[in-house]
View 1 (cartoon, rainbow, N blue to C red):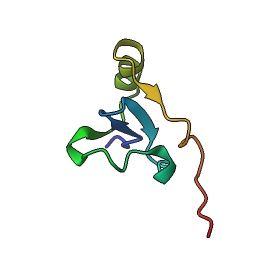
View 2 (cartoon, one colour):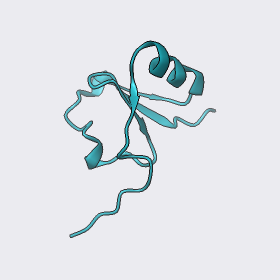
View 3 (spheres, one colour):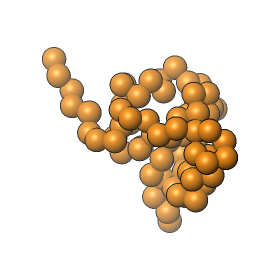
View 4 (cartoon, rainbow, N blue to C red):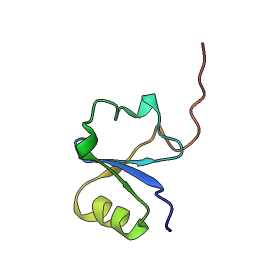
Length: 67
């Protein structure tokens, strides 16, 4: 079974790293039916090159919680 490595926000056209995605990424207001979990790197490249999707800068590393 392929690991679902990416979270795609189809409202904002943003590709998130599933393991690192958090509050700073801004996808929490996106309806569930407009989110997609995927593990296919070829599909990610297609979204970036042909559909204008961008990679989220906020979820490239772990987000630390502070109080």
